[in-house]
Image (tube, rainbow, N blue to C red; front, side, top):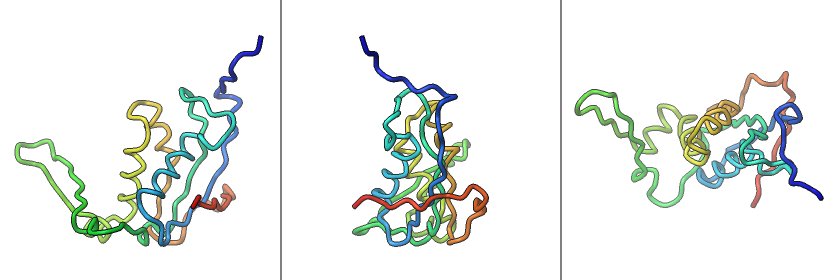
Length: 145
């Protein structure tokens, strides 16, 4: 009788993938990155094991959103003090911290537990076209669509 294959941590082979975000739509890009971080593109995907690859995103400052989302899309955070709710829209966030928009979009698409936090540590987002991971020899990843 054959059993279902379950990936083991020692058997996982991780690659480094490079994604250029220039001109890409935020949500579509984030869902592809989340899929790569989870390892869903591999035949050895196991839901309860982190089988994903390392992902480097460059040109995060050139990502786009459709419609009026640049002004309407809001990001909220709380300081922890009474009345400490802070809100910033997408356009302002892209001016101050352009890498944060992609990071938060991907974070929302990963599991909200220890496994998801471990997957998120394999994501590196850079606003410009330069990154510091040339020693890992990342492969350029072609996005779907």
